[in-house]
Image 1 (cartoon, rainbow, N blue to C red):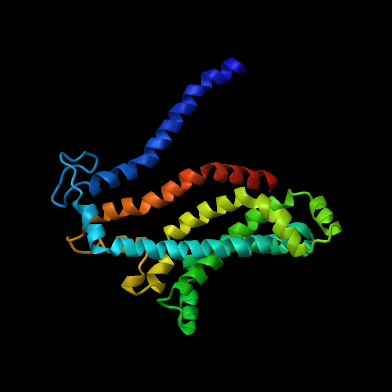
Image 2: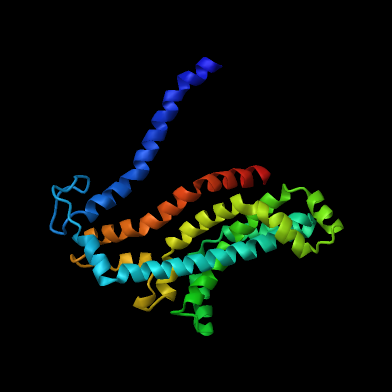
Length: 276
């Protein structure tokens, strides 16, 4: 058995290397294009003879990328905080009261995850118009939180189901209310799954485009994805090099956050899957 594992090991490394190269290739192309002048017509895979930082300089001189990044950070952070607070509070009774109705409710929540958000765009947009939520931060936050809540509820409920009920009973004997039990006993154990939710839903929110395009109609409220899309046009004047530079700037924060939190992300992903 040991020899067989050693024999198969090189194939695993080869497959891993191929997958890594596939994922790194688009990032490499973005970086290379961002370092080229718009007049450079060489292959997108070829390194520039002289790196040109003018595309990045123009981004920060105009200030649009900084404003877009601030908008994106505010919307993403507020949305994730709401999803975490509402998600874990909704998951607690689902995990602790294992009744038939709770199982049905959990199934309905999972069913909502299967609905493509853009498939109900017309209904959501008309509702937001009647509420005066177009061109407002709270409008996109409200919609994004609603679509993002099913995943936190599912992950939290799976994780909490594995926490012994005896801990709740012991805290009640000590005089804790259900809210105190949740805050002081259950919540401190949710760090890994919380980080998982922060990364998964945070990346989705950071890259959100469809609803932002219709809700955030003022240029001053544009997020990173909307700002990058301004570099493209139906004419031949599309600035692909500028778009690549803007994309590189937009990628850096989310990659750094993932590298810092990856230990908790991996642990939370495994625990939520196994404990489910």
